[in-house]
Amino acid sequence: MLKRLSCLLMALILMITPLAAVNVSASVASDAANGVVRVYSSFLDSDYDGTGTAFGIGTVGEETDLFVTNLHCVSYTNDQGGLTFAQRVYIVTDSSSLKYNYYRFENYSDYVFYEIDADTANMVSCEVIGYIEDYDVAILRASKNVSGRVALEIADKTESEVTQGDTVYALGFPSDSDDFLNSTDWTYVSDGIEQVIVTYSSLVRDVTSTKGSVSKVSTISSVNNSKAIQIDVELSIGNSGGPLINEDGIVVGINTYGSTTTNLNYALYSDYIWQVAATCGVTDEINVGVSKINLPLIIGIIVAAVVVIVIIVIIAVVASSKKKKGTSEPHIEEYPPQPPIDDTSTGRVEPPVPPTPPVPEDPTASYPRVQGVSGSLVGNRYPIAGVLRMGRNPQCNEVVVAGAEGGVSAVHCQLEYVNGVVYLKDLGSTYGTYVEGKGRLAANQPMQLKVGDRFYLGSRKEMYEIVLKGGVK
Image (cartoon, rainbow, N blue to C red; front, side, top):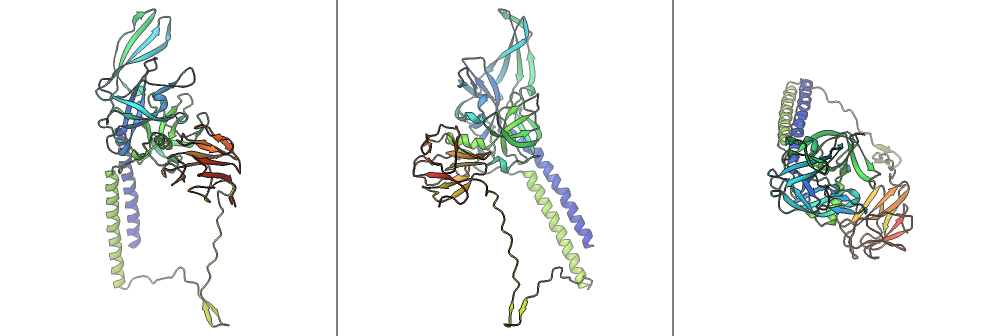
C-alpha cells in the first residue's frame, strides 16, 4: 500500500509541474510586450530616416521614461568615419502614423529608395543621454512617461541567466510584420522619378514576439569582441534594439545583428546596458522595485504543495495503523556506525578518525592576478580569468573599489586575459586610467600589459600591479 501511495505522489508532482510551466511560458512574452516601443529617428540633413525598437528600464512593472535601444537606430556612420546622430528621436504611440514614400527611376526600376512621412504630433520626443559606440548600445530619456509602456527587469549578468539550449523570446517591430493599410499607384514625380506612397499600421501595441532557443553563447570578433547570444530566431529590419527575454521574463540581451543569408542572429549581452547606464548616471534607476508576481506560477506551486501534504498525511495514517496492528516491518540499520577503537594499552577508547578529504585544485592557478599596491584594496589579489571589471558599483564590477581617494567611476576599467595576454581598457571613466610610464589610456582602447606592470585609477593612491600567483611579497 505504501509503495502505491508513493508512486501516486510522484505521478501527481510530475503532472502538475509541467502544467504550471506551460501557463507561465504562455504569459511571459505578452507581459514583456508591455515594455517594448517603436522608435522613429529623423535625420534632417539626409534621407536616412528609419525605425527600430526600444524597451523600458526603471522601476520594474511601472510606466517609465527611460528606454534602451541600439546606437545604430538613432545614428549612422558618416563619410568621415564619425557618428551623425538623428536630430529628432521619437517613440511611436497608437495615435501616430508612418507613411513610406518609395521612389524609383523610370529607367532603373530595380533601384528603390524611400523616405518616411511621419505624423509626429502625438509621438513622444526623446534624447540620447548615454551610449557606448563599441557595443552599439544607447539609452534614451523620453520627454515624459510613455502611457502603457513599463520597465522590464534586466539581468545583472547575462552569463548567469543563459545557457545553450535555453528557450528565449525576441520582441520588437520587424517591418515585415507591419500590417498593410493602403497604397497609391506608381506616379510620375519629376526628372524621370516615380513615386508610390504606402501606409502601414504601426500601432505600439502590435509587438511581434518570436520564440526560439539559444544556439550558443560567444563573442563577435568583428564587432570589438562584443559578448553576444547566438539565437535561432530570425531578426530582420526593425527588430534592432528590442529585448531578448528568458522564460522568467528577464531581459538577457539586446537584439542587434541578423543575417537572412547565413541565418546567424545575435543579441548583445544585457551587461552592456549597465555599462552605458554608468556613463550617464542612471544605474540607480534600473531594476527599482520588485518584479510582478506571476499568478499562474504561484497557483501551480500552491496546488502542488496541497497535493503533496495530503499524500504525506495519508501515508502517515496508513503507516500508523500498520504499527498498531503489529504488522510493521522490522527496522534494519543499513549503515551501522563504525565501532570505536579500543586502545587496551592505555585503557582509553578513541573515536575513529575520519579520512582527510583531498584538497581541490585551484582552477585559476594558471591565470595572472591583479594585486592592490595602494588604496582601498592594498594586498588583495584577484585572478584575471576572462573579463574583470573594476569600479565603485557592486552590480557592474567583479572588483569593487570602495572608498577610493583618487576618484573612481562607477564602472571604471576592465582587465581581460586573452590567449595568454592581459589587456587593460578604460571604460570612459571620469578620472582616467593610467599605466605607469605610459600615461593615461584613451577610452575603450585596450593596452597590453605584462607581469610587473602597474596602473592606477584616478591617482597613484589607487595603484595595482599585474602579478603571478602568490603576488608581490
